[in-house]
Image: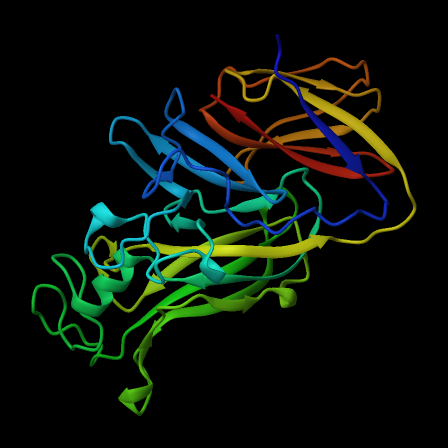
Length: 330
């Protein structure tokens, strides 16, 4: 049986808010564990959804590793190192909840509405993972101890101990392009004139997202004063919980029903709609790989047999509406 992903696209409608906060409370099978894509049959891009929002993940079975988003109930706040990558330093989710989300920032770090709608996001709670927190507090084999003037090898690094670890949250427009708006949140900051004010975030801190305005999604990036030859030395992790908001309000109600199936697929997809659109298929770099006028025959072929595995955007446009959806080639 074909797996059909049914999209209800509201163009010019008043959209209702998604029903709950993205709280990452999808049940896990046991305590002190995490979901990071390990149930996938093959390597590659996948997603999970919580509270009407979809988060990107990329799983590598050969290395039993991931990039992007995961969710966890791990509560270890004392063990240093990569082996404890799934814990948040507060020891629980926000407001003592059981679970939380976390992100290993290395390519697949984005979040979108499950149904592709435009969002007005209110805010979220952010903190450090135990791995990143203890690395900054004590240093390790690769990353420096924050506040010192030397790197992990004991070489003077030019920072004078004025270290920082920064999360930047970017608003995304159609086709995953940046809107130009972003929010900075320092997970650690040692640049104060009075060193007593220096800090590494250890509690859940609220981050207001309203200044991003209406967005299709978010992208998350990390940067640090501890930069080496091969990039950032500070572990590229942060934790997040209870992301809240709603769908952007528009007017003039019209509903179009579209299905794209099978999704995911090994390369052959079908667009099921009676409407005619100018269609573009766009890869993760923004390159247009297919461009054509659809016929509205309810079974429009989209052939991605000769492109790389991964996530792609289907952008549909006519005189009445513009729709952007995501598909995954396995």
